[in-house]
Image (cartoon, rainbow, N blue to C red; front, side):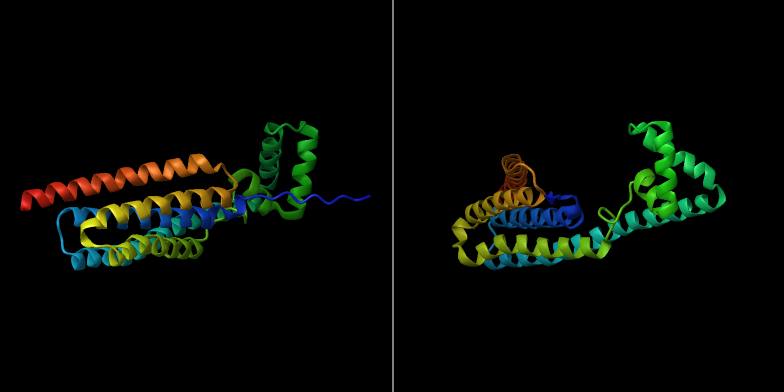
Length: 232
């Protein structure tokens, strides 16, 4: 009887998941911190709302641009390495064969078997074999600038919308507390969801993300309180 075993893997999600978690976390923390800081300084509710919306728009655009530029740089480096490797395969095929075989020997194969494996893989797809096993580049983890930029911008907007919405629905005297509380809950949910999506432990992710988020918001609120006290 033939048994088919399908084992789930999460590494193919690493590109967009990293960008989405970073974007959502930054959206929640930076916007909530901005709101808490401005509110603690004694600003009017309309000014707090304006600061929150401005932070949302500026942050989303900044995250998208930053992700696109950084991941594009990674993609350029990958293309450059692949082009160099392709030239090497044409100019020195025997050296490249030996180089690939040595990689397999270091991974535990005998020299004879490593030589056979390198030959067969290079006969099938020489550049693909070297890209994967020598350079560590594959379709699963390859840089995707547009995907990373979109995931980051959308996630930032979704995260930032929560503290901004709390400003609209909360009396002025409680904006700092409510925005902070809503944001901490959102961070905990984000940590749990990202851990589940990535197949990792939930509790460490939740503790890590809420701790640093709370620290950032507390620091910014403290600065706003001191600044507001000094001005008054």
